[in-house]
Length: 129
Image 1 (cartoon, rainbow, N blue to C red):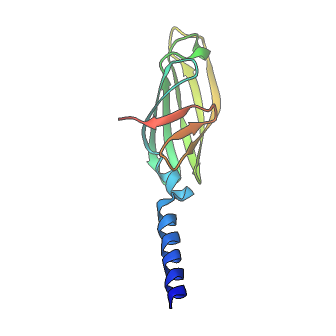
Image 2: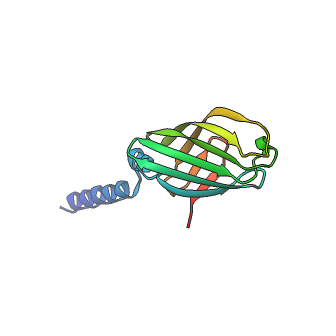
Image 3: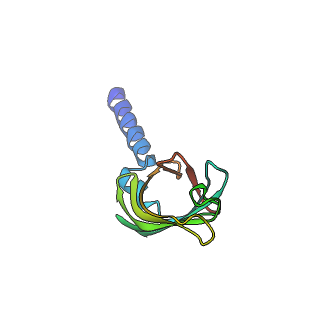
């Protein structure tokens, strides 16, 4: 009987551990909200993600974008969740006074089990408090 009980305890422990791990579908659904980060050039980034399940509206603001000559930039677009990955098709535009720049771009965000986002440039985003 001891072997059966031990096997039951091992199975229960495995089940409990799997419940603590975020599934990719849950991770992707958890990206909605407000996020902040610091860009590689030291500028402040804010990110707003609205929606749920699979489709999201995304707005990113950089307070001093290098591509804009130090002027603010905004990125607006729509994203689709694919597992733990959010792929966003967006338009980057510089604020008036910056470089004349308007470009279609693709950004990817990977949502981790520790509830951070990492974009395709390696910037790590945390939830805004």
